[in-house]
Length: 296
Image 1 (cartoon, helix red, strand yellow):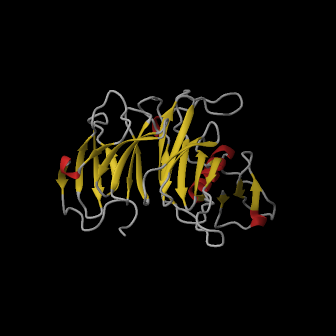
Image 2: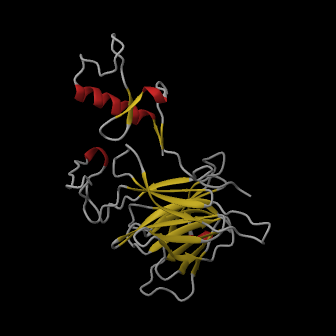
């Protein structure tokens, strides 16, 4: 993380009680000190406000960042966040949180890696918590670094699960509590452009790929449950149907709605759903593709 101040040189900076730096003022007599006409508390508040406006979080992705995702799971956690949050601090200075509240956790994907940050200080700065890096692929001497294009959070008890995917055709399920990759989901044979967590069933996940399929997975068992035969660039569950339907956006600007087949027991082999079983909600609305990743 880099903090910058465009109007002060290093020789003009002084440490503040919070461990940050701020410009100091010079008196008419040549001495150094805070302006006598301004209350010290108001002066510090102005300093911190100025630093917040100038603060830059410098990612170490070393390439463009493809997606950001906060761990907001309001089905399990009703704790206020953002402007509605009234912070209560422990003796050590940490914010007291509901055990189910992970809304301070931010996941990012870009290049061959995913980073997980703690936004405990509500935008003042981000502390890196965990870092996941994909191995190069290909023959020795001609290795290529995969790129992570998409991510989403999945709720599990006592954990925060970040799921990522991209050009390596795999879905990576990462545990923040255990600092490890729990499982890799394999089945797609081309770049994965989008993944979405099921709104009511924490173990289910939807993925879209350039291989011409959308798939539903159980991330705990690694099984592919459903295959929707359609080339979608993005997917999202319909919040009004509790996960019984979802929408897809395609590379030609088409939006379709799909029903999720019911099953009491998970199928041994994936259930295949054809494009004819979906409903076209809008076609030719967009002049170009919808969503992540370009058409190939």
